[in-house]
Length: 365
Image (cartoon, rainbow, N blue to C red; front, side):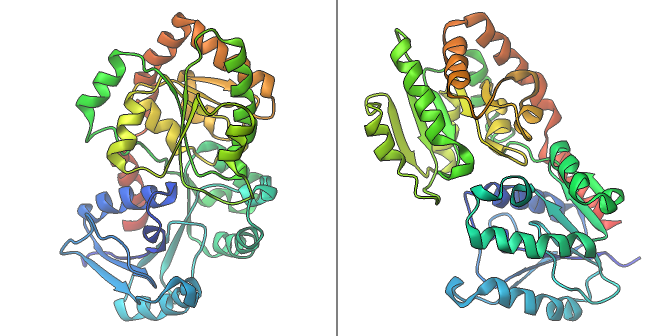
């Protein structure tokens, strides 16, 4: 029997540092080693680290993003698919080109923020999601989602596609390659709070900072806060807000950092703070768990699901609730130690190899 030929929309690989980039790369690197012939399609170049394998071919147009590379890719994908005689096509992020018969199609849905919290998105991005996602769901033979929460939201809005849905969760890129350091992280408590995420409205940073300001005023020895993430959109000047709240001596804005630095930051953290308004999964939560770091997270959307018993959940719209949670986890050493111990249990639910095998079974069958 001939090997299955699988094509992939590789555009997420053009955006390193994002959660969808990590999800796509971690699955692809593993799945390509499980067999099959793989074809990666993109209008723009991407980092091929781990993907230069004998059974992987790269179809890259090589045009600048300013030339509407995404639209060009959608036009070229059907042509490439015919040339490569693919059996299955996977869209890792919410979109599917119109593929020739009899190509089987799979699409991964990371969230339905455009439905649930569209006001937290850029208008063009929301319009793109509203146009392409329903069409992708209708065309797909297979729909993968990253959490039970996203599954529930998809089945709420699109119950007619419930029979197509399988959960394929993310995991921590830190877990296996940094096991020794992770074990060190489990042994001791860190000495600062950590936030990881793009600085955009959905991440709820202004409310977090105001809550943190209340905590600083009330605490005798407040933990400092380190914020990791590139600038997003929405007109939020986080640096100005830090100054306005008088928190310059307590808050450090680190911007984007490389993976080794991020690892060190997790290892030294007392707790991860992630009171987002909405997450379809929340990759920093599972990364924190893999380093033995408890999480203060939103009780809404997928974060409480991912954190499980290692999370202290809060109302993301309540500054008082967030502030009280920070005070509680700071002074209650038994609570912190209990949450820290539970990270070892919760992280067992997330493994890239398991997720890759599950996705590969869908694509290679």
